[in-house]
Length: 403
Ligand code: PMT
Image (tube, rainbow, N blue to C red):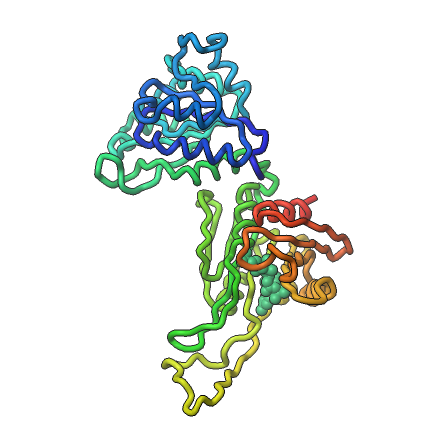
């Protein structure tokens, strides 16, 4: 989901992590959102009003009695305008005010009037001693009890005062993911999704392996979208540089290497899955033997032959185990006779849907940020998804499966 046309109200209180918020504002705007900013007076010690105003393209609401305020009721009109409010960083002082309804400045009055109406994300950030304080923890408990408030737990790590502990505000990328997730309808709440992603690696000797060009981008985009829609996700992934920010309570990441490891992990999870999407590029064959020592160059430039044996077909095995109500989706990566090959794979592996991508389409397939796919269903329906970001393609795939 993009944030096109969405109204995001950013609240900033006076902590050092405020210096990261201009980057969050830029990211929100890049995603298509309109942004307004409200701050405490102290927040402006850490980030200037000019910066916030320039990036958001709107006046900053920081002083209840400033002459610039149109009607002196911005604390009412801003929450009315907003689809969502995010307060980051939220200091110990602001958290306590929010929890008890103390409304004595621009940020706390705005928070108070937003509380009954709009979703609010709160990202506390402070020194670990301030975080552990019973007063802060009591405020946190109270805030957890408010229906519209979602707390974004501070992370552990180095703190501005030079110590290390719990109290770090998550990075702007993670805050952005929280915003997108909070605004995504929870159409997969209570569902369990099994996903495979990335390549498999088949070891040849202690220094070499057979693999392919999959980066995991498509599979991770699907996992991210399922998480945003509220699903619990098991993501069985071959080696990849991809990551998923946030959602740690509903994401079970199972890193694997070989096709056999991927098969074992997928079969273990499949019984509880409502939906399984098999996006991994699995090696069909592996070396018959893994050499215990590095394979040496052959004498006299003789050719070296490798003996390969077949790997388990994970999709076909899950197809055999599929029970009533489970949905099984495969991918097909083709270079010729695309549709014909995809339809045969769907039938042979007992898939409910197959997502075809072709290496003949520029911008589709391995390692790109974009993809172009056609989704076939076993009942004969077909949907073309034009070239788009893999995150958008992931949305279209899920929209097609759950019409
Ligand atoms: O990771 P990226 O760089 O973003 O690239 C994405 C992708 C190109 C890898 C992805 O979009 C894709 O097409 N994945 C499937 C690639 C593939 O191996 O296709 P296939 O036609 O060989 O396999 C058909 C289906 O059977 C797939 O769902 C595959 O996961 C599954 N399979 C294949 C072989 C095997 N031994 N076990 C399987 O489960």
